[in-house]
Amino acid sequence: MKIVFITPTSALRRFLGYRAAGKIYGHSNSITGPLILGGILKRAGHEVEVYEELNGAVNIESMLDDTDVFCFYTMTSTVMRAYERGDLVHRRSHARVLMGGFHVSDMPEEALAHADQVITGEGESVILDVVEGRITDRIVHGEVICDLDSMPFPDYSLLKTPCDCANVLTTRGCPYRCTFCTTSRMFAPYRQRSVDNVIQELRMYKKMGFRYMNFEDDNFTADKERAKEICRRMIQENLIFKETFFFGRTDMAQDEELLQLLHDAHLTRALIGIESLNQKALNRIHKGQNIQNIQDAAEACRKHGIRLIASIVLGIDDDYREDIRRSVEFAKSVDAYQLQCAILTPYPGTPVYQQYKEEGRIIVDDWEQYDMMNVTFQPRHMSPWQMQEEFYHAVEYFYDFKSAFRIGRIFGLEYGVRRFGLAVVSRLGAMGARICADHAPTTIYYKLKHYGNEHKCAGKYKEAWT
Image 1 (cartoon, rainbow, N blue to C red):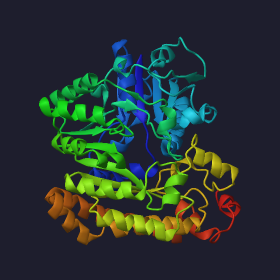
Image 2 (image 1 turned 180 degrees about the vertical axis):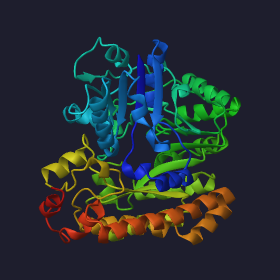
Image 3 (image 1 turned 135 degrees about the vertical axis):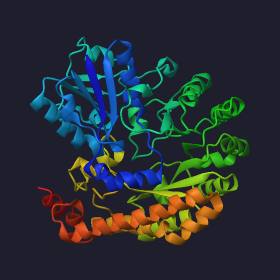
């Protein structure tokens, strides 16, 4: 059989301007799940192709005549595109449609209106039986993989869209449980691969010629001794990439040896969840850190030449406008290389979603808007449009042109140019959204701005979407 895996993306991210901006932000990479599942099917004798729609156009119409099974990997912001593509397949071909991923794992019944079968959770143990027809249940529950070393490595030979950065998952899940996080719930419990197994995968990517690599673990430094050993092995075997990204946590600042090894192994681009400089807000989301931890982590990154991507969350119930702005100011003051400014998004399956649903505060039903750049709920201390404006204020303030020269002096010309490009892109994006808010009634921005005033109930906003 011929099986095609597609990771769809939203309309905004298919826009050429957005793709160009993505190249400024970082390097193209591919979600590993379809590459692992596709490899399992390939070794069973099937013809497999994998496409990442974020990185290139996917002409699904040209595949309809000779494809037997389409598999769509879904996240909440991309699921509407998956549904649209699944409906197209059903209308114009006899191929089967399978769906998996974060969103449909939490809302499988919704997905069944557009798919023949839905796989929830981890799909490695069931994908072959589903594709070959031995499992016919419409909702298939994937089993938790206890021995991660038994899983095959991602098969990049299947990928048909551009990719210049290899993704590596050395763990699944996270030992922490922030209230807005989906991955710590879908991939529970927290599990680790052996260091030997990780190093074997890195050797493969070196031979393939990858210059960039991402550790995509939710928290690469959760087990500090294990992280140190991976870095030591990378250094010893010269498994050093030009740049390696990882997700860290503020507590890594407490270990000087770890910080030096991260630097020496070129793990020099780290996203750390600052989230807020308001301790009440941190406690509310169960972050498990304090303000001093945040300050120590920022200083440690600066000292060891690790480019900090500061992640902050806008819209936590305990935060006011001044709290948000203080967090952005802090990120800028410590020479954070980039800012991941995320609007709190109530994803299905999280405690935040359940809370806001019970309180009637969810105001947007269009899943495509659940991308951490759009307000989808009634904030506690301001109107939805005021919160949306805070997002634009944050990125415009952080990515000013003057800071690009400072970042260039600290980290080098390449990074200064990237920062300058992000300053341009952030202003163009904010300007476009504001124009839509004033002149495009069908857009989310217009509806957020024109339906209701500060502190009004969510009902009037919800009516705008009906």
